[in-house]
Image 1 (spheres, one colour):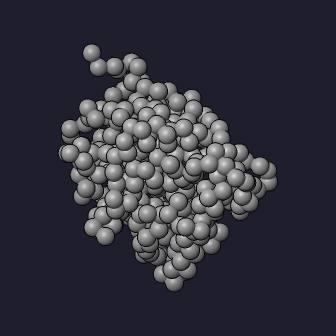
Image 2: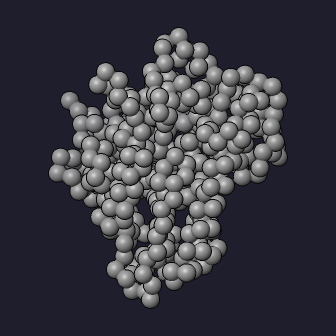
Image 3: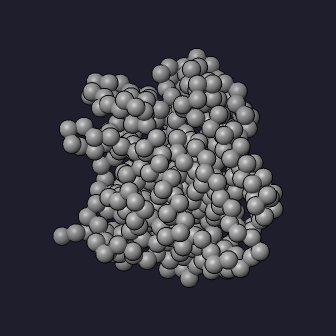
Length: 358
């Protein structure tokens, strides 16, 4: 509960401090609601509807998020994901069209990132238990055995709706993509119910619906990983889209004064040690952004930067442990900007390859 209170405070603070709340030029006051799902606190704000209409929209959006959690969470015993996991190495399992389509996107994200993002990471996630009440460091022998089970190539998608994990003991975990998908679905519902100005914040996964009522760009803050009170390193200015961050500060535990975060490297089995504090993706599809932020973080600064630059309509901000900020080339656009809001950090122009520390 302590963690949830802190996250709630940060989300509320973010809406004001990052400039998400517009100067009101409509007949309506913003209507917002918090909701706990997908292992985080979610907040959605509707800017262009009456309180009564906004409440109906918010209830429908959060109801859809609950449905996604029930189908796709590793922590819901009867979820479709766990039904697949229980039949690993035995037989394929029929799933809903939405779970099948999201797994296709997860598989594609794994392929293009060469496994830096991998939906079959479940055995490692369970062994570390970083999101549980009893996290631990697996021993080397256990990790070696578990790494043999993590391989997206052993995820077989049988059209139109069956999924098979080839090896016994394999386990899917969509924690790195389901939250983004939930944001996309919330946006769909909000639009279908008539709102054209809203902000969706699913535990730091930001998705913007339409524009601010006053016509000015949205301003989204990227969290300072050393400050839990909503202090920001940079502000991203944009007219629409999604802003998704993966960072070392999101979930972690300490052992012998060493911090172990939740972003696991599928090549080592340990939390990714790449010299990064966070990677923030800016694009249109939030599920895609969710997977890409994880992949770029695991790849590290140089490879991750090059990876994002190779993709169309995707931009990223990389923040390093030595307090440098790198932004991909698309931030030169007049519709997309990055500004520094922390005196200890500095924005480095150009690619990491051009700015390797001597």
